[in-house]
Image 1: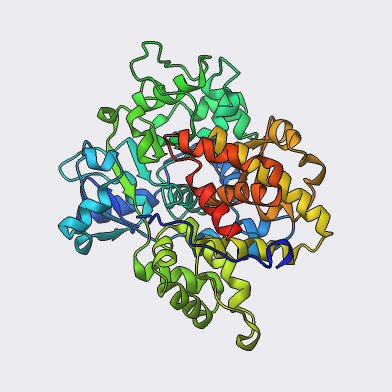
Image 2: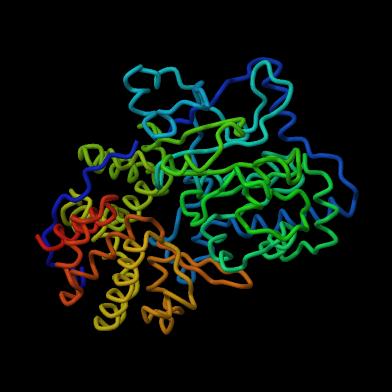
Length: 493
């Protein structure tokens, strides 16, 4: 197991993510439901040249949503995110009031369990997020998807983009544009920007003249704004300077609030994803639909394991191993934890039974096995691996401390000495790269992976200042250092 082979492990994370339901405000049935589905799959009438542009846009979107195992520099399937068709699971909905304070606080699952409401959930497809509600003549325009970290919001967004590009859902929208709030943060120093410029920067095939023509029909446009909790600028819906012209140059947060407020491109549809903690920055009075993702059902967890391993029998054995462990099994409710656990277990369960060691029993063991797989599949000199791990862990700790998990190539990557090894496939066992014309950024595949690597920094480099970490943990009220110190305790046990 390389540099961590001899470690004894300790139980680390006791938190239990919450199961994949989605709470909504109403359901359609019968003929109305059929019409809604048909409307979702029918393309709007477009001029021939706009239709050609739409196809180009679909190809670009399709390329950006390819499974990471196709994009990964090393081709290492152990460190690649599962494809959307494998990873995504259908959503669940029940009726809920948009203004429900429990939903805003992320306590919905607790209330569901108390009321026994999970038994009455109905399965729907993601295209129903913008379905017309009962007794309403129009479809919702502003929809918010809430959920805890790693619960599947961004994967759902990627699924929507992929299916739109493939022509299987949301075809009533001529164009769909996705913007991540974490990337909008990088434009923070650019005080003024128009919507047309913003779109042009993200979608190079759309020139200004073409955009102006596209934006003339807002009703056929869907804007997806992913990860509100990561935005450093607070959305201000009381601001009187909302814009109305796509060519108006305003602060980027004004563009977002103007789209939601419908002063900009009135009639367009907007989907926002957010953790419950960030919902207070939204004006819920402007929201037409509110849903909350809260995890996988037990049968969906088993399905995920089977598809991940590609062999139903092996997947079932791996699942049964987790099923007998309360903490790890509860973690499998979350899609991102499910991926980490399956990725860590794959080499174990693909090894002949007589050659296997003991299966992991704790969260620390899972993450050490994840690290072990990367070290094994990228055999370099031990000193090189150790140096890279220390630099990577130091950057991860910086991310925990500064409450960010997006690292800029010209800033953090350079500062922490990782630029010389950016071509290393070993590094991409941990990081996902995202490039635009202006920026190249890196994120850890999962936030708890960032916390684990931060702990590895302190473990591998005792001069890192463990005492300072413990002081920060005791003084910090938001608990951001708690999991790092638990991982560190597990590594040191």
